[in-house]
Image (cartoon, rainbow, N blue to C red; front, side, top):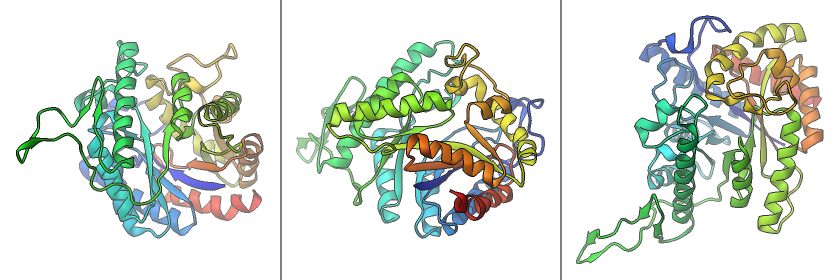
Length: 382
């Protein structure tokens, strides 16, 4: 089983929890936000030294609140690649619709080649209208009054952009004509003629993996048909198992190949390790509650089980007890965490597990401690 680390890259906070301040009332200085970015690099170096397989970042913009302060995962990844030896590095996710597709393709290929093939191509559609619309797209967030139409437009833009990127990656030269993108645009003069095709420079020189979060029924249908890996996070364990199996069925239908039980599927678990269950719950609760105070209004908890047994209503802000009951957060002693992870291993035959160990407000020293405890105290029990 490959095991990786996923971090938002947030500012260290000393007042996290379910109560005030409201997320939008937080303000941090540029120095505080840059300190978080520098310490995030340190955590990546520690992950490499401890033998983790991969390290995952985020792409977010304009977050003066300090929750996610890395706007360019690819540039950050290149710096981290230079300071590590074997760690594979990805962004969960590069928000494709906020990029020109060919610029994203060039930048990923540059990272992948300069790192000797250690880049992972994480792609997604985004969640935050404040970030999306200034950068050229729409988002069907739960708190967007025009969410249905915005989601339709965003999905169409994403799918065309990914067609462009894959053509650029896999072909010496290419052209593309869709409803949103035309590559190259018609009528570009060049040395007495017109540009008919483009060549991406550089293209990936090494094999690469593409991963997309699976968070909705249409995405569950789309990702396996593309042949990519699916990332699963914040989903009730029973819902997850059903989607996990459906992913394999769809992949086989499309490609005529039966996946191994855990192949091309990645599980992300929020983990907190302390000496005992009581201490772990007390340690996790403030960051858990801040996490959902921040993300609940965007609809992130729709993978939880609701009171009627079906998916939770959009906008749910769950308690830590609800997160534990859904088995989305694994909190406890090393033995408790090993038992929780082993149960998923038995259910899903995990090939890829990603730990989310840095909760909002945590110090980076705490996160480094969590990675060490996983490696030294949990792994021997698995």
